[in-house]
Image 1 (tube, rainbow, N blue to C red):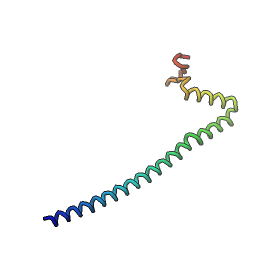
Image 2: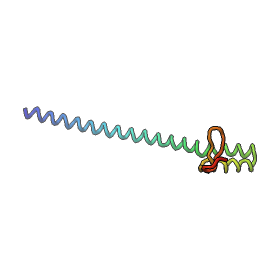
Image 3: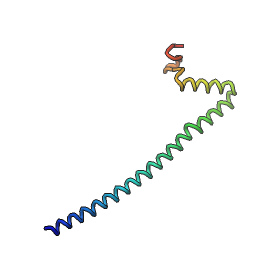
Image 4: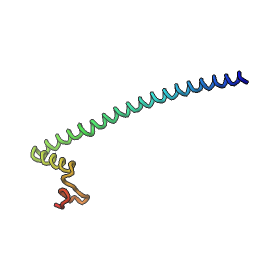
Length: 99
């Protein structure tokens, strides 16, 4: 019986080592996948947050001129900062007061 018990312990140790190796392999795959997702997200952010607004700004500047361009930029900054609120019907609010 002790011989069988030792074999069982030996088999359990082998299974534990296989499980550890599988777990490490899965961890490596997860890290690789996360790195790929991170770079995809960085690329998406750089395109959406930098390149497209620059192109959009250039088109506005070339089409409407500098004064309209600056007024649109200032209006966008006010909207983004929360100084101006706009509801669905297009009415604008400054702070808590209705315009």
